[in-house]
Each structure stands twice: as structure tokens, then as C-alpha cells.
Image 1 (tube, rainbow, N blue to C red):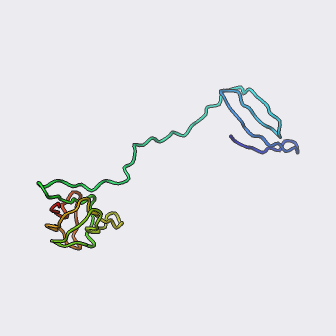
Image 2 (image 1 turned 90 degrees about the vertical axis):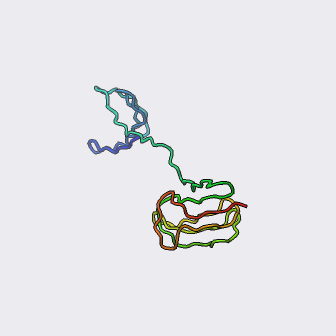
Image 3 (image 1 turned 60 degrees about the vertical axis):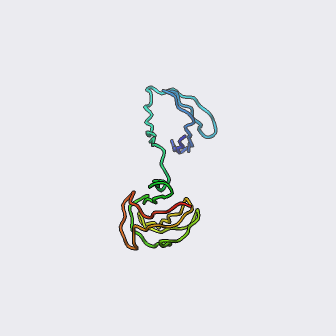
Length: 141
């Protein structure tokens, strides 16, 4: 637990507190074990443990079905559009890069979750977007 060094009348003592329960303390002094009783009980102050709820590491990109055969790609976090990697009429596959935007000083790439054709792009480079703003409409294949 804790280690101390004492010098009493020229003699050096290395003391290690091994265990403490109420007013009984187990010590090791220069290699010898001792169990001592204190006149009063020691109040042990413990540091409180901080308990937190589970942290979500990534908020998934929200997508809503706009109607049969189409999909709206929504912005997951507020930020600024840096690069648009597709144009209207492009055919995309699952995992293709759609656009890159900056949010919280990080560059984030939005990927296609479904295959289809780009029907409308709602943003331009440099636009500031808010969470849940529609970025791109996709006609599903």
C-alpha cells in the first residue's frame, strides 16, 4: 500500500503498510511482519469512481427513404462541404465516396450505402451544412 522511511535515534526503518482494517494495521518493518492495534480507527478516504454511460463512437449517417426507389443522404454532423466526388447522373456502387466535409476540425468522407444513380446534389463546395440536412438524392438500382 504505502512505504515510508524513518530514522529514530540514528537507526533507519523501512516501513511498508500492507493492510489496514478498522484499527488493525499490518506492517512490514525492515523485513519483519507486525500486526498493530491503533488507539483510534483510521478514516479511509476513497476517491469516488466516476461512472459514465457508454460513449457512442460514431453516429451513423441518417438516410430516409424519400419514396420507392430513392434515398436521401443526410448530414451526420454540422460542418462545411470541402469536396464533392460525384455529379448528377453518375452511377455509384456500395462504398463509393460521395463527398468530403469538415466537421469538428476533422475531414469526414460520406460513402454510398446503396447502389444507384445520383439524381440531385443539394450542396456546393464551401456550403455550411447542419445535422440532418439533405446532401444528395440517389435513385436506387
